[in-house]
Image (tube, rainbow, N blue to C red; front, side, top):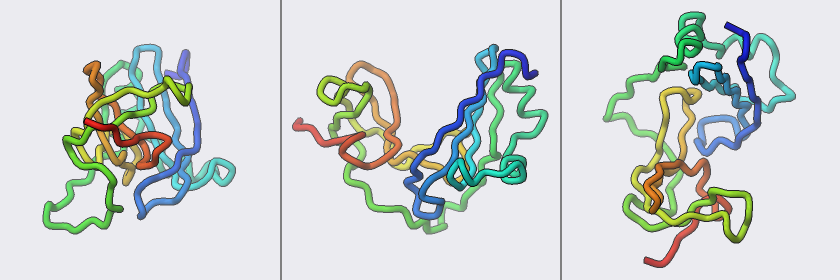
Length: 158
């Protein structure tokens, strides 16, 4: 199962007020195309073997990813719709036109689109990890904005 696996580790700023300011995200990619991600609520220099094992996927999940199958990790919690979640107020609303950073160039690395969802989440993301926005770009691609800051997403005139 280990042969040909690529593992990347990076620190990400978490936009959820209930999580650590900096999380360590670990992506596991298999030659089959299967992949998964897990998060550790601490800076990478603080991660211990015990902390990694606490959030590491089960053997069944790893084998599913190795076969190229979808496997939910961590398991999504079923939240009651009546629960009140305190999330920061976002700058943009569903349907609003925006420009998103899609490339490294600060001038040409932007693409126009519209917000199609607030507080987007993928099943493979670490618990309590959310992207403030899901955006449909004018070219048809769907992307998410990992933060609600002008360096990632900004308003455009209609």
